[in-house]
Image (cartoon, rainbow, N blue to C red; front, side):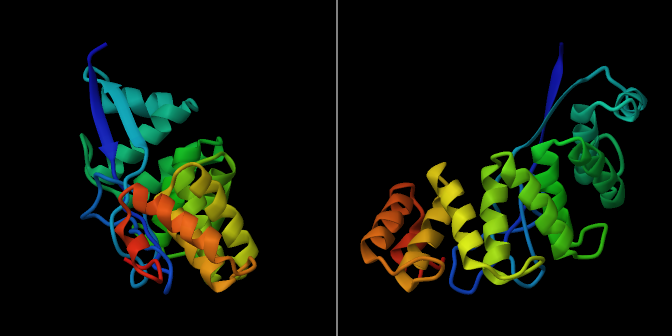
Length: 224
């Protein structure tokens, strides 16, 4: 089947005052994926909004499949409306389809939906909803969602501030190789936040991040 490839990059990020930063959904970074608050977020982070579809498939056929409950097509339609591919760009419509896929348990849709609530594109910024969907995605193993729910717990946005929970999610992502989470663990061990102070573990996590090319690990505070 002839296929086109659509990569939606929803930039997403939360800037924790002393933690590694990332970026959030905004219309200028849609080709790479993830984000958080309009004044707290920075930098672009790539995520997994991949869409393949037949060149012959019409929008009406996609809509029919989506309305019949196809999670994959619901996700693809969300990406198309978000990017303005084949259809006019429409953040409200994009959110509608991502929500349908998210409600059916699609981890990527849950992640993107959380990013949209963080960025306020097509909706009001809502950290409570963002935390809900980041957590659902994180519980399914989405490494990026694990990083961002950790940041929300660290800052107490949308959830009660909880360093233990923040540490838990950073550790899950760090164990999967996420350099930003590794930097944040290094910072938390260095400062005894949610864990006992341990300069050896702090150094080891910074070292792991540095080995992946994360230059923020060179800064004593782990900030880019």
